[in-house]
Image (tube, rainbow, N blue to C red; front, side, top):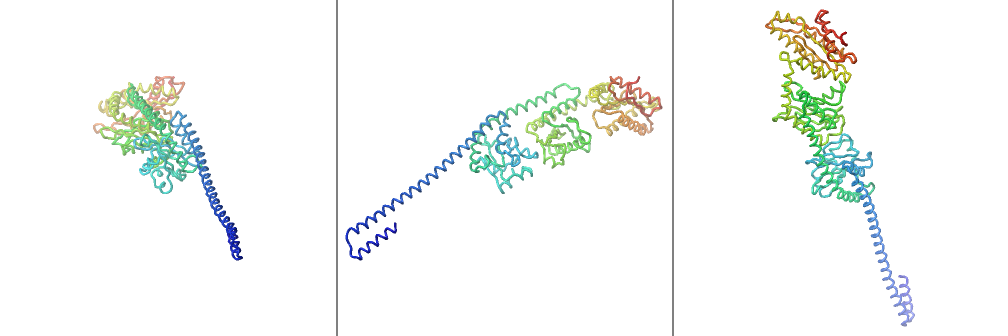
Length: 574
């Protein structure tokens, strides 16, 4: 076009130089100039129109993309919500959401925390290590941001400096590049928090992921809170029902208070899914500090049992020192030197008149931390036992006095016969060993005749003390029973002890009596004893009387062979 203008100017210039100044030339030039101006404006308008069209097209494409993206997100959201609402079980619904956010256990993990009594307690987890904590600490600043934003993503220094990050085990920290916190609301307060290492869906822009998460939380929170309210009511009903169940056990009539405590503790163990349970009372005169009054649970081999008991005593001491209900698992147990056998523990002190009189201890092989229900149950049980234990022990003291021989402090004949009957039938049913030792003091009549009946009483008291000492050294089982069976005749019942073990125990007792120094009125009285042993033999001894007759025959044989010796029979005398 500039070329056209130059040509017009050249023509005009030539014509002027040649003297041609007619009007036609001027008119042609003017027309050409006007055409150029019109063309220029027209092309400018076309360019503007094209640019506007391109802008409109880009906006349309962007809007279409947003519509398609929103439609895809809405489909994903609706699908998740349908799955969530269709779940009848609350934990399964939470687990379903965690599966969406953590599709691969290798790459990440997720968990849901309930906000209960000011603490964030683990309710459900996916992909997290077994050493996870039961309670998580959430920074106040993070909670404040969550209340404003609903969804929060932590990265870098802010992540590593946060308290919630420190709650995770080292092997979990290694997989954390970021933490995504999604708040569930009950009215205006946070009732729960989802924590995941990624947002959903994978591969989508984080802004879109956050938008989806917020929309999901709005829809899901109502159902979660509703379910949590329902769960809370059901939880309270269950705890109350189980407390009443334990209380009804304590109200039943048992043969002895100790049996009641055993039944009570064993039921508590089952309700809390514990491996073992123990009731320990403090004993100020004992260097160990506590003594197991009642124990129940899975059967352990001797070496394992000793190690488990060592762990229990550590936990009991912790309970006495802290004076608080304490749940321990994973690293918490390791911090107290418990690195094997016990995976989780629950301890609750027994407190009466502001004094810590003992500890209730539950232990589990499983490393899964104890839940809130178990903590509530052991707390109630310890309070209940604290209020009733002294009464129970008073009953036990009265009963023990009624069962004891007044002179020796050993079990009397009537009570021994009852206990003997029970242990014999237990051995018969389980086809386990059971042994009886009858002890007769040699020439006891001569002791009474030569030194007087008071000297004879002192001899019986001293021999009874020797029996208690030897039994305590050799076997710690509470099932061992020592009794005054007659005038100078004593008896020891050894459940689950075979012939070889019983002979070894009998020899220790015989030797201890022989070497004992028994003095009365500054006069030393020599004492020896004869011992007869019988051991239960299936298909041979069919009654307590048969086993007693065998021990009596063995005792007669020991006397006939010269006294101060032991004899044994494993079958009834012919």
